Amino acid sequence: MAVAALGASLWLPPQEFSSFPLWIDRRRGPCFPRIRALAARKNANAAVSSPSVMLVSDLDFTMVDHKDQTHSSLLDFASLWEAEYSRDCHLVFSSGRSPEKYLDLRRQVPLLTPDTIICSVGTEIRYGPSMTPDNGWEEHLDEGWNREIIVEEAKKIATLHFQEDSEQRPHKVSFKVEKKDAEEIIRRFSKKFKELKLDAKLIYSGGIDLDVLPQRAGKGEALAYLMKKANSEGWAKERVLVCGDSGNDVELFTVKGVNGVIVGNAFDELVKWYSSQSSKDHIHFASNRCAGGIIEALKFFDMGPALPPRERPGGNSNGAASPRREIVDFYIFFDKWVKGDIPNTDEAFQRLTSVIAEDARMVYPWGEELNLLQSLAVVRGQHGAFQGKELRTWVDSIQEQELAPGVYLATWQSWEQPSGENRKGYYATAVFKDKKGAPNGVEWLRVHQTPQKQK
Image (tube, rainbow, N blue to C red; front, side):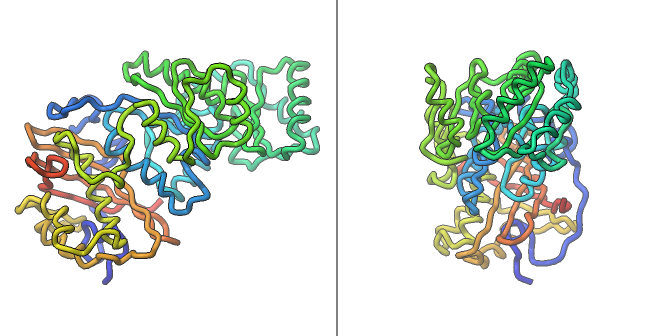
């Protein structure tokens, strides 16, 4: 049976499989008992300090470029973040989407799992893969909010069209408004709010979306709340970078203490706001679109590495042991291999075999254990299997733990999505040890991978 896609060709021999139970960490996926989040650990071998950044990004046409079906810049960001930032940084998505629409997007594009998701234009805050709601934030928004009156007033305006039910939230009423009608509708709404003494505000974005929120809500207010929470709980980061493309992102750039990037494809309403500001040294107007502009801003503000792993020669220039960089580089190599982007030579393939210990083992979901080097023999025959075809591959939620001096445990999720097919995910666990001269200072000792249930 031919190997279907990269994840299968990476570790799984060509045979059918069934699920095999693993210990599942509440936030990050599979791991062994008693493994804790890496944020509590400082790698004694690290030659340089890791970046300390909270990156806060809008999704549609900021992080995600819906005009690029290959999602190349998004994949570049994902590999850069996992390799260089995910250890000690905090990733936040701040979107106008409802939680349901956000999950729809995750099924369609190669998004990383954020530490925090701010949904529904700053009216909902949720944490981790389980998307645990922040009930304190929602209680904060209740004060002075009267959703029923807003709905009643909206029904009196013929040119207002309610958005679908999933986008109507407890603290958000959303409409579609033609650009030619927007100014008059906003004026009329604002006047009515004053007459009725309603504690609400209007946000127009994307040339079509009009949201009515509590005065206390919004992307900026939600971020300020999150930063205050981080400070009080001891997980605040040294730098904060906010990223946006439209009118509902304006508030992000006004939060005290942040740097910001307006991506190169920004909508007119955000460009006009930027042009009207007298003080904007903290904002970079990117030349690149979407995630490419975000990577550009990381370099502009000197927040940390800004060269995506796919574009660098490979390996860790400072010589420090880095299992997470090795995992990212390993999957990038396989992606290039099956697409035929690197030559089918012994010298090229040695990038894999040189970082596999001779006695390394692979444990398969059905309980079989094989020599890892022998398992890679299947991969060699897959060179160019996806040449000229669309295939997205990425890794997510990498965690690493030093078990003993020079010995590391890592867990992660890998994803693959051939053109026209649903994405497939795998949970993986691996053990590494130090290896002098290896591209990332480590070699593979043991790997255990099992497929995720399709959602």
